[in-house]
Image 1 (tube, helix red, strand yellow):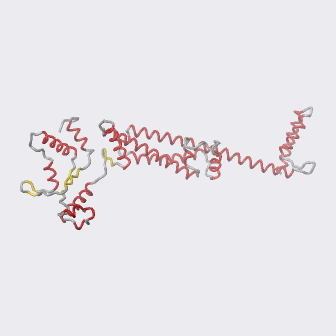
Image 2 (tube, one colour):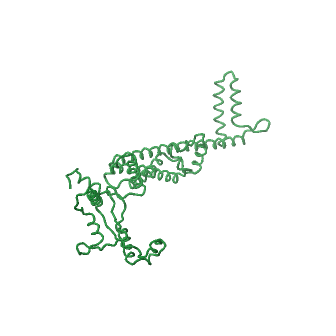
Image 3 (tube, one colour):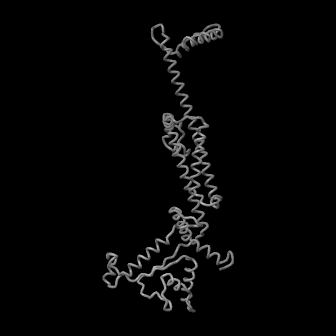
Length: 355
């Protein structure tokens, strides 16, 4: 091996990212022997990878391939398969022939191959971390883009992109969980109400007023602002825990720049959710107060109509009575004294109405 940072170190680093290598030799007719000693399939592969003593350019090229295979694929194995059948008719129609009708040696070899594949297959991993299907797809896409542009794929750069994509996806999932939880707890008609860029303010003309009425009619809002903040903190803890579970598998990722940036975006978005909730809560409170005031005025007006009658025997509103009386007072010479007397009279009338 080379010195630290030299070619040997680079090969070791690259080999850690390569998968296992399984060499399947079809139509194998040789004897598995080496100098008269029986060998297995794996030993046959190792013998085939040994450099051959020759000085031709063709031999040198083949030896280079042997060296690369040995260097990059540290985990390797071999499986030899004899011809499935002896007669040519069976071989030409092989896809339609049941396995049990093929040569017993081939059946044994195929069973051995399946056993090795199942035993040795493991999840693709980078830096000791198993990849999900989405992560593997991002990694492959990054490699392909580098090759198609005439560059050389860089594992560290590709891995950073995988982590960035995974972290961004984790942020979206965490926000979705928060929105769904808030919508369920606060009986919101749609989780999108919490996304400032996804829905109009409830008091906007674009259907927002109806949304606000639906929220208020559901009965969960308004709340005290302290209660809104407390329930928000509970949902934030759940969202951040989901993000951490999806992204942080070791301390290096916890402190990586990509992870910190995405976590900051998550916190910023959650802060926006809180501001949105407080805004909706305040508007619900205003609407409820308005409804309560309207109801109180309606009850007051109904009471007055039952007690105040006009000269013609009809009913008139309290507002009409006040307007007429104030208009009359404005024609009096001593308007200030008249208004003061009218105020005292109103106090007496209030006591009478409440009696």
